[in-house]
Image (cartoon, rainbow, N blue to C red):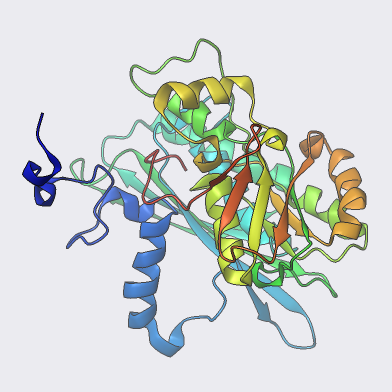
Length: 355
């Protein structure tokens, strides 16, 4: 056995993705720390004063006359294109609708842009288009403009979709990540990690012994019920890439608060827990597509929870934590054994091509 003096520490290699890389890697698209660094150190300096100051799921813009519009855009590259409970088609509608809803907006219009790989079967494209149309009708949004491009068979991977959306923000609604305050309650609308595990279950060689269906859904109706309570909703986020961990870390940093979770209150289904245990994943870092995180004043928590539970998409809602003045910018979970652990922002992408 070597003594400490004989060990060559300089040759050790960290197994996580390198943070300094001369080219784009998959982790840059994972919604974690590498994504944040790409935005902060490359895009924002390049954009300069043309960039918006607030970086949220959607931008809230003045439309004149006191009215406000929410605008959002997102791209979908999920692999495989069809998975239990959904497809890239309905995901492309629900994801952008939800980004608008997280600012309290009523979604109205979407654009749809397709990038198609040469050789993609038209019957598959037809199924995707039908799913997209059905999701738009269900959400009550109109598809008002779009675009289609085709790339050669060596340059793509099936179907990629971009959707952009516009919605109207009701008067008096002010929702944003910087509004979280110490003492606020942190709520979740239901089980976490379901979408990520559903997509993983379709990938080669992965079987979890049971079918897990994606939770993909449009959440604007759920948000409307929360707004109708009259509670002052401080923050709403849909924890997609990077999961609940990424969303809460972003809120903690934006508002300069700490967030303390109660681990036993986290609603992780047994199937998700088992799959994450098998793969060495943290359920808090697994993507969701039909859940929301809410930060609300403590005195309004019970009322908002009741509104969530009254909606089919929020029946399993619960309080999972509290904003605190300590360890600002960090998320900490109290374990069942009385200890605590830091819930960090994912470095890169645990689960590539999940949405």
